[in-house]
Amino acid sequence: MTEMTPVPNSTTDTATAPKAVPALPDAQTVTDVKHYTDRLFSFRCTRPASMRFRSGEFVMIGLMGDPHPETGKVKPLLRAYSIASPSWDEELEFYSIKVQDGPLTSKLQHINVGDEIILRPKPVGTLVHDALLPGKRIWFFATGTGFAPFASLLREPQTYEDYDEVIITHTCREAGELTYGRDLIEALKTDELLNEVIGEGFWKKIKYYPTTTREESPKMGRITDLMKSGEAFEDLGVPPLNPASDRAMICGNMAFNLELKDMFEEYGLVEGANSNPQHYVVEKAFLD
Ligand code: A2P
Image (cartoon, rainbow, N blue to C red; front, side):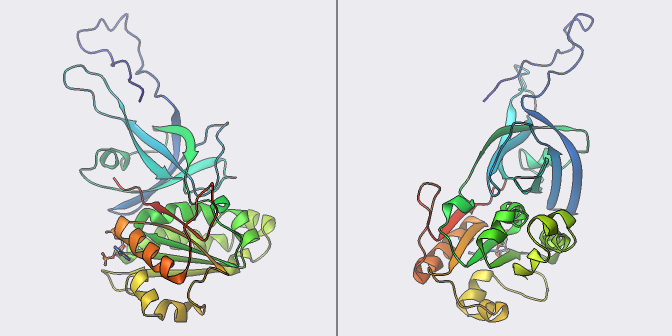
């Protein structure tokens, strides 16, 4: 981790001291911020010209921490964040939780257009098409901010080239937490560029299945329970997952990831990785 030179303090001769705070390492400029609920927001920032990534990957992003009380030194405060924008986008997008006493998100939630964030341009991750064998239908399973990598993959042409059907399930506590995902999927219908590049009406391949657990909405319940009872498959008009046709990516809280993994093993699906493509892959949501 890089350690920054402290900003000159009051005992320093300001006439001879450098005027500006040292530039942030790997600084990128915020270009847009949207707040959805008191717990969720998204933002966009500039993208390093040389940075390449595969849709679904994550990077380390953050801000400078507070100065050390004795030495005055400041260190970057970084967390892993899935990139929510697709690989072809000239900017980067992130979708984040706000934790009032979280070391990073307590500050990050206050960023504005024009502010700088730190971004280490070394993308990695397992929620990538390369980690899956060819199949007919792809399932994206998310809870909360675990929607982020799927926001990238839903805007990635390869998703529609590789699969006949794209099913995205999103389980949240409250209805307002579905807004980011719902708006994003709705916007695909009128996205001229994607309809031209992927093919007019590509979005018709998507089946969106949002559910809430702690607030009334058209579909209540955890997706895991809705699959166990068969209700989700009935609603979606598809059979339960099977290794011959279905591929899946999981991104949610730890309990959710583990429960789905167990269910998949029962369906006969095998977990894959970049080096060993199989039927499904898992990433945990990166919460503060
Ligand atoms: P629930 O309200 O029943 O706990 P969180 O904000 O805690 O990360 O949870 C996000 C969503 O994920 C909530 O709707 C929560 O439901 C749901 N969830 C938590 N654990 C599981 C699990 N094991 N399987 C399915 N959904 C889960």
